[in-house]
Length: 134
Image (cartoon, rainbow, N blue to C red; front, side):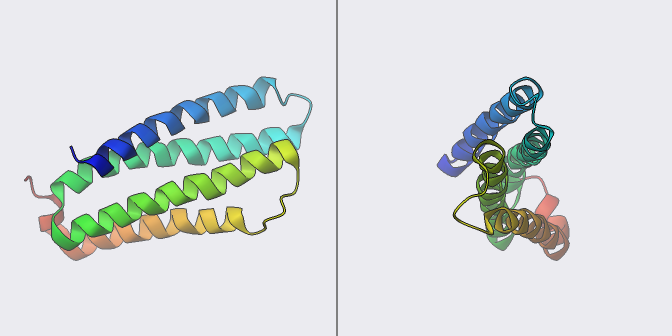
């Protein structure tokens, strides 16, 4: 397992833990603020799904070669950016209110979507070679 794969796996695992903690905090620590609870739950859901997606990408990147591998890695980095920008912004909005830097959540959401599109393109463009056992 390469360095990037280990980093993604550790990042994914830590993000899974943070997402679980965020759900607990939303339910208990933000009980009096329905809007903050909603933001925390949404951030946690996206964070958890993309943490799991990163783990799957670690498996896929080992099977992919050449340009397909580059595409899978790009999708992973886009998921990392999405977690930081989208989920991070929603957590901050829920706890501190409006932020001085705008458009970070939409940028993070766009990174998530672009990551999925890149992964789909890799699967379609590289077909059987993408999924062959190495």
